[in-house]
Length: 210
Image 1 (cartoon, rainbow, N blue to C red):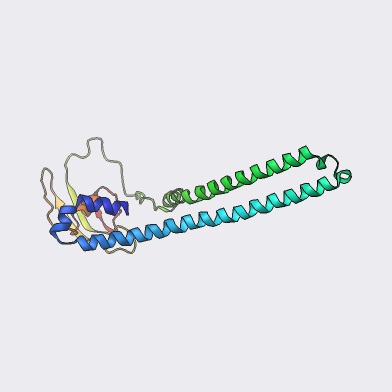
Image 2 (image 1 turned 90 degrees about the horizontal axis):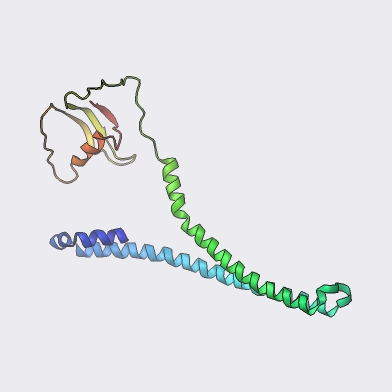
């Protein structure tokens, strides 16, 4: 939602020029509703656990008070547990423990909610595919390499990830040393993808680059 708002403010003149104001407003409303629904569920869960903790606290204090009263009624059976000082100490600790329990559980829930970002980063790190390893045909180049800046694409095809359409299909060209090449094309024609695949930011599906 914040990213969409930032992009909208930066491209405001372009949006007005192409009369896309309603589209961007509708998308922002959609993102805002999704964000608010998530936050609403989060705060509802906090309120729910707060009510449950209050019930547990009241029940605990009630049980402690009943046991204290019973112990005070039978001093011979309970001994020092029936003393007034011990009863006051018990009730005091009971009230303090219930308050600490509420704070502890609330912080624990917030920690679990915030830890979602850490889980996502860990998932990206552990499940991210590694780069393709070099084949046995590769040899170390001489120290003077590259003597000539020649680049050759041979039937290069590439897609950014599985399930997406190919952005480069059987690309063939050769750039000679000291030759300056300009890549021209409309948006989405694959200009940036040539640089991406050249620097191995994305591995090629087929073909080779020399």
